[in-house]
Amino acid sequence: MDDSRFKTGLCYEKLSPGYGLDQDYTIKAISQYQQFMDDYPESDLRAEAEKHLSLCREKLAKKEYMTGELYRKMGYDSSAVISFDAVLENYQDTSFSDDALFWKARCLMKLKRAPDAKQVYQLLIASFPESPNAQKAGKILAEMAESGK
Picture 1 (cartoon, rainbow, N blue to C red):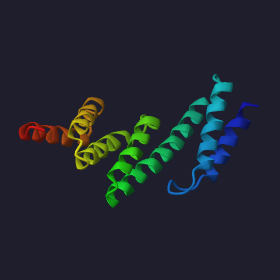
Picture 2 (picture 1 turned 45 degrees about the horizontal axis):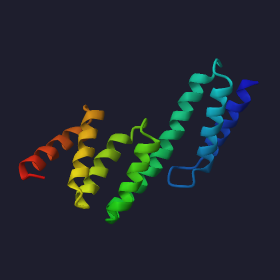
Picture 3 (picture 1 turned 135 degrees about the vertical axis):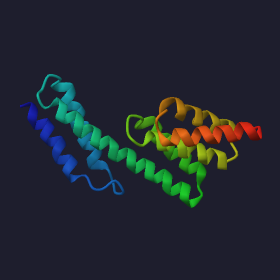
Picture 4 (picture 1 turned 30 degrees about the vertical axis):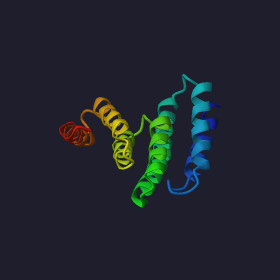
């Protein structure tokens, strides 16, 4: 009986298109997986449900992150910051968090909000010390210190 809700989540996940399109089915899949885990915490399928839930969240994070990238490349830095913030607020457990922090800080610099950018760079270094973005952030912070920003 517990597998029916899990399989409903799988069906919604299979109906879910690529990240660039409407993610209504991905959201429905997430809801089914979460309900399944709430209703059947001891199920043998729990680990698989968690894996699929994570994949769905990763897809939603990618959609939001790529929206930020599009805005950034178009020069709409304020809009990019909003999208990167959405990644950080809703999908901090995904692989897009360190990139979202890095590009948020870069956009803040372009918006002449250096103190805010500095805080974001520091958060990036503290949260993802092994990330290549953290190394870049460290260099940028050093340059900012030298220039008195």
